[in-house]
Image (cartoon, rainbow, N blue to C red; front, top):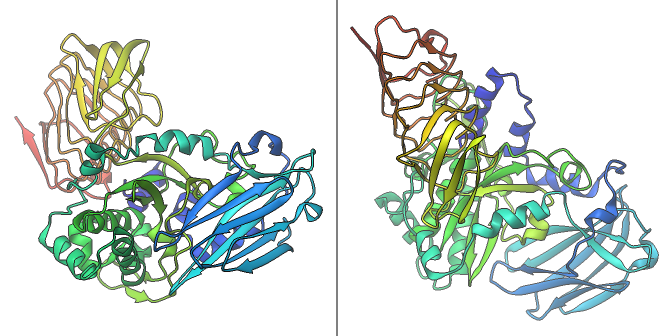
Length: 514
């Protein structure tokens, strides 16, 4: 998903711009919001009491730090000698309690915590040159005991992270090249080897790559506002340019990790601050991604990282080629985060893994789907195809030979960005608005004779699409149907208007057939 470019398309359909803020929000602004949370009236805090009493953090070297609650006490288990400072804030940013040490310790804070009121815990640890501040939310129950408080996305994130498996086969898949994650490209291999030379542990390799990403790359503010240029977000291109938005940063980090032998995956979803994700309903029913990041597996555990929010450099100006880089401070506040902490600022929609979670369900009044371990979705039945929102954990689309689907529903495959080819059944007569929007890896689509209409933005932002044959039976093509498809050669019946004069980025070639 190319979120900044995608936002220009959404703007065509009159959407809000909050998503842009999420993609490039600076670490400082995020951390400020974490401690300056307003009071909440819409949701009950008791509904979000955590069912866990401890959270396992880890340092950049892999040393564990456990933060736990026991009755009215808040404790830190630290056996590595890492310097740890705990600070608890109230809703007005007033410090309720603080303590620091390089050994295990406990503090009794219940007398300073009011029942039913939300507080935040900053856990700051320093290990060598790496300093990180990570967050948890907590409160006091009416019984008097302390409890951690989940964000509204936590349970959702747990379910979506269920595809981050640690068996040998799954981890080996997370070392293989994928579209935009070309870990076998010579320039990626050479850069990874240079960055990790002499390093023997995956922890050290990952840290070296993350530091490189956050200090040497710049966030591309020009791309956010550019309607007329399709940007490359593949690691092979960006390793040279070192200017990208969130997805490109995630792609490059993952490609370098894989080239260095460290399993990793690009992940995407919603980025926000705690005023939107803790005791607020801003994103409870929202699965529309506005941000991308990555996850990495170290010693059999998956951790979340966000090189965009930890990066300090920015690329600003008026155009792709004439901008300038402003250098700023980088950090490690979003590095190797446990899910409990990560969920305060991120809602996870999916990770781009090659495997799929085996599942099945209904996808229309008379249609069903089944997803297999290898990431294939098989569709059966008839009528209109309507995949459930958020169902995108597959890369191979197969229609059963007896399938008689006639309508591909609105936004049906939107954001299914790792599918590469689709052969539609000969019974399909209508493709509705946004059906394949932002399917960035889609290279080929078979449109059957008998197809009558293609809706607005049906293939918008399918920037890998190479050839489309629009059959003679098509009589209607909506606005922006093939906009932002710069590689596409489109063959269409003479006289059929595809409204290309209104496109922001035209196809490579349009052929009129007699």
